[in-house]
Length: 95
Image 1 (cartoon, one colour):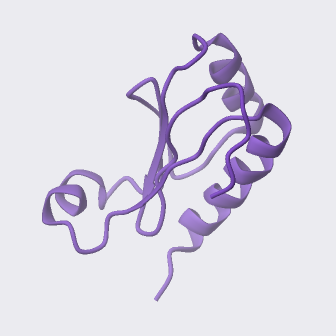
Image 2 (cartoon, rainbow, N blue to C red):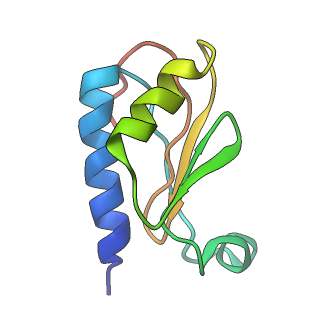
């Protein structure tokens, strides 16, 4: 059983990665009691610089503003039942 909100959010973040060129770390919370307890009611979750910036839905324009406002080399994370994004570096990372 998949998470349709996670799949939608991940597709948006991947498309934005093509445009904005940042590293993306996808983290599955399944199987981790700690991550499931922390994020289960919020997934999908996207973090930039360790700050939770989106839950349930990724707003593309707000994502662009947040990422562009973040310092170079800052971290981007997204958490979901099947995903979590990671670090912005100004370079493209396949993942």
